[in-house]
Amino acid sequence: MKKFFLTLIIVTLCANTAFADKKPNTYEGMGYVGTLPDVTKSFTTAEPKDALPTFEQIKNFHSSNAIKPAPTDDPAFVNIILKTDKSSPYINDLREFVPMLESILESIETKESVQRFAARVYYLNTHADYFRDKYTNLPEENYVSFKKVMEISLHAKTISQLRTEAYRYTPYLAYQAAGHIYNGTHIDDQLSYLQMEIESALAVIKEAN
Image (cartoon, rainbow, N blue to C red; front, side, top):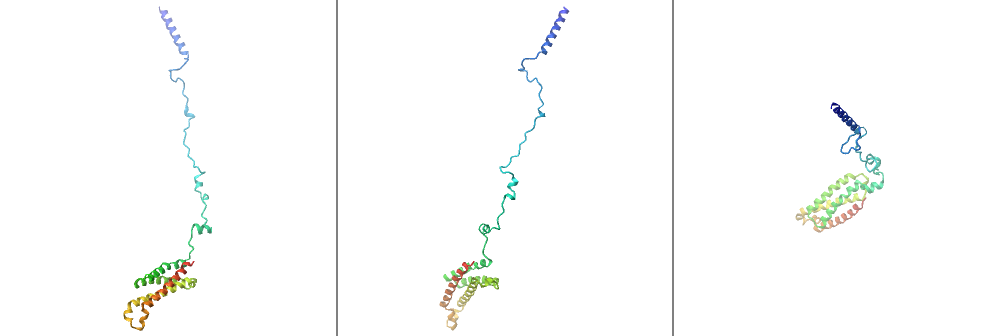
């Protein structure tokens, strides 16, 4: 009986050993039974690359070599693009008399009051004095326009004084020999002559260059 049990144990052990040594034909349902490879040795992290501009390089785009300097030495650029003021200081000063003379001309045509006429003439005389002091003993004092301004200023001042005196003294001089210079007709004649002088001076001033 003992021999029987001993023989059974030996047979069982041999069967288990043979089964363990035998490889299965399939691993289905058994999961992964192999050895995992070490992927960290050959793995590299992908990093984003900087995007390049459509032109070659930004520094070249802003380079001073890429932007041509303004041709300031080119007369066509200076005269047309920049449109520099070609007027001389004398011409600029001369043309300031245009609105002054036009205002006196309007005063004569509308028969403005003595006070308003005198104020306009005083403004003209003030600028004429500055104009004379600035250009006396200079070539500009020989210009026709310069002489016109001086003549108009003096004539307008004389008539302004005449009108002011007539306004003040006519009641007292009406029957005296000197009273005729303050006569309304005489003053109107002087104003008409001044009007023609102003129109002539304006034409000269506007054509000066």
